[in-house]
Length: 330
Image (cartoon, rainbow, N blue to C red; front, side, top):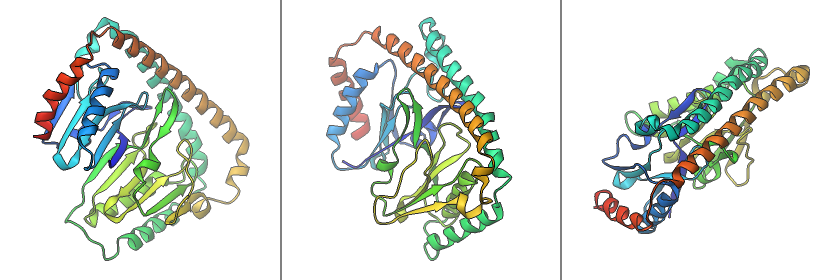
């Protein structure tokens, strides 16, 4: 089966952010599961996937633990999504349940530490911003877009879908880049430092592709959703992504290429000149991220405790399958 996994939400420096509408908003048929414990939903996912063995399936990952929280069958314009109380784009009913308070408080604590990490990250970026030639980066982006798109026009205006390629889960930072790029023939591994223009570079490429009529997938940063981490143009079998921590990858097949923006546009010796300052900034940033992830773990534990209290019969998954299968696949 052609499974394409990605995330549509994140617990971030800007709070809980969801691209639910980008993924589910235009579907002709969709089912929202409410009150289903994750264990029961997993049974349903298996049943749904076993029924669809040929067509592509988008597997939506859960931003807290990386488990499946939804399936989309794009050729059928159909999808199923497991809503949880913090999914403010979908539901808000359980937000007033007293038992939900420990979950909410832990999530707020996580968001507080992620938010505290953002200005520290800004300090990190500021070191390199002063030493980066952004005119050179603009020219580099224009050259890449020209080589990629010359003579290749699609529709009048390409569409873009917003997603996330990973998340800061209770298990640590995870990403699905290998799965997302598995069938692409050309991959550009973007290297650099914070503040060296990787996000701006990616956004320029995405805008150029859309203007040339190509549909794109833009994957935002799970820590700062205002920042771009990857652009995929499936129609061209091509992608470019931020290949630095916490989602660092290395070329492994023909068609892979490394583009290092630090080497291309940053004053030589910047790393060495500011090594002491950067070490302090990095340590402070990592401590806030550590505390944020600890709070996420507490939220996950509290949520699992809540789920244990949900009355459930395994046969309900069969009943749910019968109710879902007809509207989705008829």
